[in-house]
Length: 151
Image 1 (cartoon, rainbow, N blue to C red):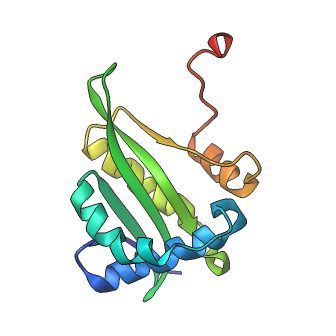
Image 2: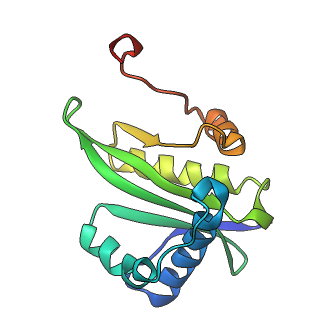
Image 3: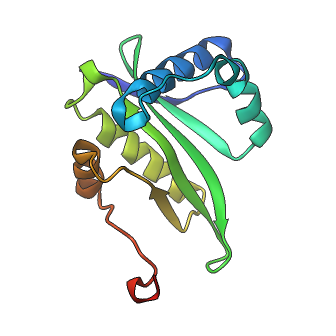
């Protein structure tokens, strides 16, 4: 297995086709909502991501086949006066799961976050998505609450 990870170019039609393919596959999964992307989303995603300006997508490849993606959004912590990186979408193709691709994507996200001086990396995961929760836990993520006594 020779997995490569690179950043998608939102202005490249081939890259956007891969992003949309993987994101649509993820959206159709029960843990992604169980419904594919709308035609409107497919038609405008690249343009809107470029215009947003605080996003990047990582694509994982096994040879020439795109097998994983991570859509990441930058925000800012005013309490720490530093950037924050949020993993907004994270998916590995069903036939490619269990091969360490998720770990490789997370390592690249961590590298980018450090390079950009991010205070932290955040993500959300459904409580019943145990495979994803196990991956995130192995990588050092855990449940987070500011202060449970305050609700």
